[in-house]
Amino acid sequence: MKLNPKADLFIPDGTALPEAITRTTHLGIGAHQDDLEFMAYHGIAECYQQKSKWFGGVIVTDGKGSSRAGIYKDWTDEQVAAERVQEQRRAAQMGEYSFIAQLGFPSKDVRDAKATATRVDLQTILATAKPEVVYLHNPADKHHTHVGVTLRTIEAMRAMPAADRPKRVLGCEVWRSLDWLLDADKQVMPVSSRLDLAAALNGAFATQIAGGKRYDLAVMGRRLSNATFFDAYTSDNETHLQWAMDLTPLVQDPSLDIEAYTLSFVDRLKADIAAAIRKSL
Image 1 (cartoon, rainbow, N blue to C red):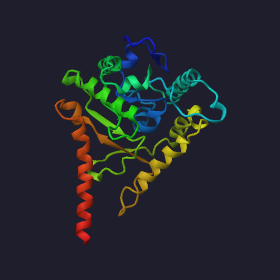
Image 2 (cartoon, rainbow, N blue to C red):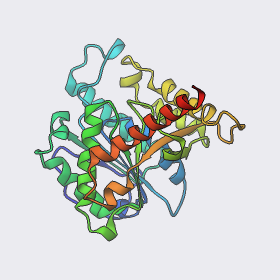
Image 3 (cartoon, helix red, strand yellow):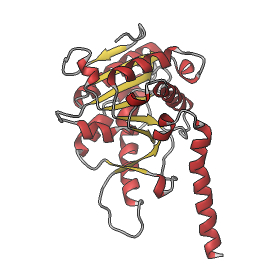
Image 4 (cartoon, one colour):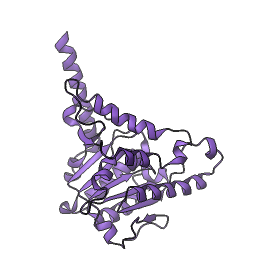
């Protein structure tokens, strides 16, 4: 499997290629180091210590643009990027991933539809892995690089033979909660299991946490909040939940317009709000 020269490929248990890729059943594709642990923990936990399920990960960007403070405030972009690669490797080891591929592209290239190298690497990985489930950023995320990763990945999956495309594609929450989705539109991902593993994975990225962002606490708080506020009329069956947007139709039917499909979720929310107000007028 040939990737761009900057790519870092790590296989925690030392399994040889291509088996480490082809055994992957659940694949997370994120923009930055730590995105997978925050948005795709459902897949990590689903595969953890399972013989027939394996989680693989792809980080698309080089991670140079992160905020930094404290002990990292004087670090150069190159120093931070190198350390983030190692943090992601350690998280992959901890979570027993099948593999982690860090492609090292600049964010501007990921956001540029005309820059084809990102899409080529994603096509290579997807064609080799042929995963059953793919976890992505959702196209309503407010981080432009996250949206760029999602678009490039959808393009790559649409280029696959129909029979090889993932059976389920989930757009997950990071830089915008998906609590606003109608309950009928929420893809519910229970993440109550192995909370110790979840906390350890979230805490593996010191450059981000000590660098000025308590993502480790915020992510667990969001999951707890999702579970608590999901249903006002019943007791909670789960202590932690994550939401996702179903992106499978965009992959199954390449003729669908991504913008129109995404905005249809907003339209349904708008109609639901209007109906609730009218009912009580």
